[in-house]
Amino acid sequence: MQFDLWSKGLARLEVECVAAGVFDEPKLAPEARTLDSAAGGRLAALVKRGDFSGRAGETLLVTDVHGIAAGRVLLVGLGPQKSYGQRAWRRACANAIAALARTRIASAALGLERPAASELGDYDFGRATAQIAGGTLYRINDLKTGKKPPAPRLRRLVVGPVRPAGEAAARRGLDHGDAAALAMSVQRDLANLPANVCTPSYLAERARAIGRKYASVRVQVLDESAIKRQKMGCFLAVTRGSAEPPRFIVLDHRGGKAGSAPIVLVGKGITFDTGGISIKPAAAMDEMKFDMSGAAAVLAAITFAAEVRLPLRVIGLVAACENMPGGRAVKPGDIVTSAAGKTVEILNTDAEGRLILCDALEYSRRFAPAAVIDMATLTGACVIALGAHFSGVMGNDDALVRELVEAGERTDDRAWQLPLTEDYAEQLKSNFADFANIGGREGGAITAAAFLAKFTEGLRWAHLDIAGTAYQGGAQKGSTGRPTPLITDFLAHRAGIRAE
Image (cartoon, rainbow, N blue to C red; front, side, top):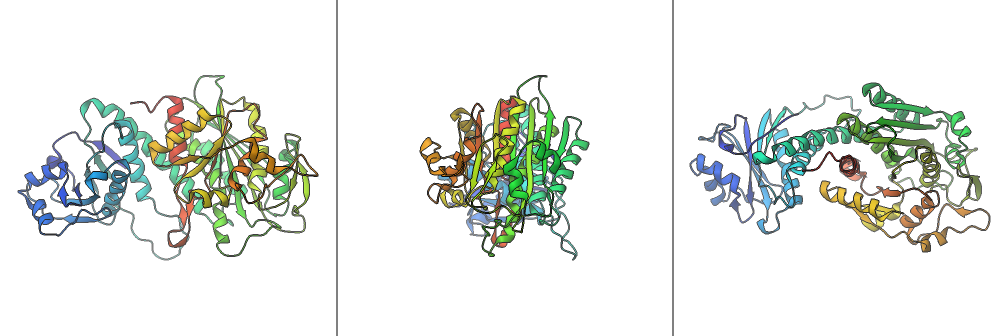
């Protein structure tokens, strides 16, 4: 996608279509009024006679509009003016681009009313527009054999209004948003693949492909023998029931100053989760192919870092395996020893994500990181607590947690901080090992984080539980690409490249 900016003269832009907003009073928004003036009042007449209500989600393509260079105007419903803000603007942008994608229009200008600069500055405006465009135009990588619908023709988008003083920030935002959209497509493509294709070995090969594409990225893949040498007993316990060999993947984006402390991202890579011996119900078990969404988000984040040449060292760690039942599978009551030397009583084999993550967290210590962030579809309890709207975030460093929450607010990829105190760790007591891998039904998302916290002493660590946000089920089943918007914005902020 080619992006350009406009500051004034919307009616004179040389594009095939111009999108403009209407509030649901109904009332033309200011940019739509400028078009209407050039068009001799045609748009206002349409609204006045009830042809367009301005409700959020509504669009109407008006053709043969005289007086404007484009000749076509896409009216976009903005909803109530009194509640119009960043989230309503984002929805309107997505609706406009989706409507354009259903036509054969190749170039368009967005003239939707911008929220106040205090709510959406020039950098965030550019970044959000490009990211929304990429996300809206994404097409699921299905394996259907029939004829596929043609790809959208939309190739050029002119966005604004942007004052001349804000053009540099907005262009930087467009570049970063375009890279974030590419990263989201990496995550979504991986997560949408079936588990018989996207195996641990496949994830490792995709990581190697990233290393081949970008000179800044070095990749190392540990096979089962190497994992054993690292004494990752918890990780190896999870993979025992599967015929697919595990892989531990290390991606290293070497940006920033030599010797600087890296940000380490850790991803849960369960490419299929049956629950093991503590087997899951059959209903919706197919969705457990998405249980590697944290791993996919790590590969996406490294892609973003390499695309924008992020001046920050970022290391991605992925523990990838299947969780399957079988004669060799770990059993409830088994005790295993982690890479940190701590013993764990496995009371439920379906609480496997924390087992592979704890060994990955221990591995992260060798890099002397500035911060460690793990991302995992970890608990159904987080879905019950927060639904599909917020990811859960916890950690042992409140400043780091706040950085993630703020990045989520800026990108509308929201996260909510849950408490993480020693009270929850008490629920993990075991009569036979240092602690158990579950702590009961109460506070399940937090006790899972409390388990991980036992392996983070001396680290600045945060945990993102994305079980409710990384994918959706039902008729719209598929990966959402979250938390890639949040984590890429966090990295850009840490590197100091997103400032206005």
